[in-house]
Length: 209
Length: 431
Image (tube, rainbow over all chains, first blue to last red; front, side, top):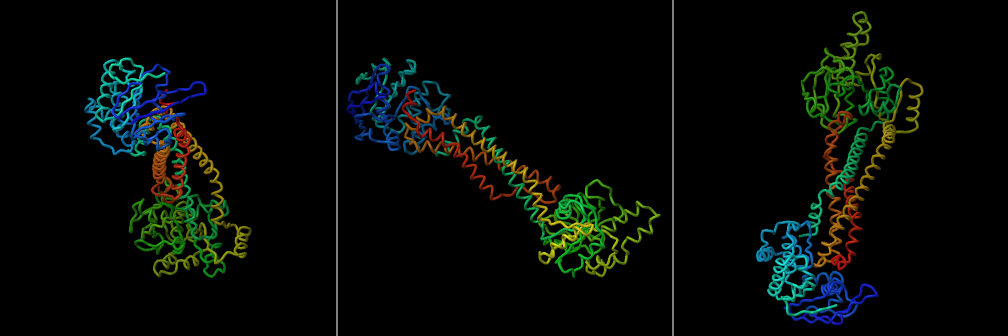
């Protein structure tokens, strides 16, 4: 359901990034490993439709996103892809709950407070619903970040170094959360990282660079 | 969550940085609106009170002063003219004059002027009686609506006038005026006046004169006082008050004459020139003098308008800077909104919304400020200008001001909005 062919990208004429073909089935969980500068983040941005590839194709749910542009791409991304970044960022003016409501709305879904509260409860974040996001601890923020990526039940979840800013305890919590929740919504999970702690959790691994 | 709600939350999340912007914007809008209100009401006042009067005839002096004193009752009179020289114009058979109304000024009550005149005066301002009657005998008065409201004078109340047009001058103690009627409100200067027969003013003043001059001049005094017989004819037989005035002793004085011509032509121009050149009186044209006054005030008003415009432009600039700065802090979250499915157009709209929302809030504060201060000013101004002012009115120019405010908010937001539209989200997110 996620398939890339001869994906290539370059920021300038000197260095060209060439990525190995990826082929994931629905519900697969993959770890993509690579050193800094190996193009991990670039690959994630390509898969998430934040960048357009120079050549090659990316198919998600049989849709070639490399030819999507503008609002159509933004809309497809909102509906089908959940992305988790290294550090959690939120719309600062809004509370935790409002940020999650916004995520639902921007993806074109109906705001569903019950769903949000179920998620928050499962993650022991229920009492944070009406807190401003800058009052959260780093670990809490990353957990809310995971909730936000999952809230629209995407078919693909992309995570860019989701644990590298966290201590062992929080890292374990977040990675278990990702694993279990991706499974719960039957989403394909791709984690891009150089964090060695994660190697034990996932069998399917791809090294690039 | 609508875009407007999100824009609102984004603004209220940074209250301090928005405060300066809002204060500036409100100041610019408020000053402009206040100028519009003042200008509109002053112009209205001057125009409403022109009352179709073609020329004012009075003692020599500044023509503007003559107009202000006798048409608007603001300035002091230029002096008096003798009834003898005024009588020809009072004659209903005068070939050029359609209507002539004499005015005698000099007394006041609680800063409302007492005007000695004829019943025809009311016709100039289309005024009608609300309760009671018009004055029939000397010392009977009919008061304007505002006078009744402010002073609490009622029909049947007696009062002593103050000598002079300002409060605090000596009181005439013996001759008490009596209220016999109250006029309907007109929105003109009449509302602020106490109207009476011309003879009343003579009675009061000659009484005072007599006290000053003492017994030795009693003989002289008697000769200038209207005989009781003359006064009585006005009250008892209800003779036309104009006829009574024409029959009165010519040594009396009045302050001015308001004239309406049958038509304006060369003859009336000659009439006016002749009067100015060959008599000790002058004739002034209200419309002309008021235009002169506008021109004099206009410079100051234009300077204030320019200042208000400048403040609005600066505040537009400050909206631009406030938005632009906030975008630097928010570029990551804006990129995130794209990741979550928001199109470029939606973010563009969000920023434009924030700009317009800011200008709208500033506009509302400015309008509240200007109308509030106009309402406060109105109290002082109606005393000074003998005309009711109000802050509780909406001018159609203010819709234009609203349109201008929204346009400025939009223009200030457009560059930040474009920069958001063009944002490279991949680059922002990998920083």
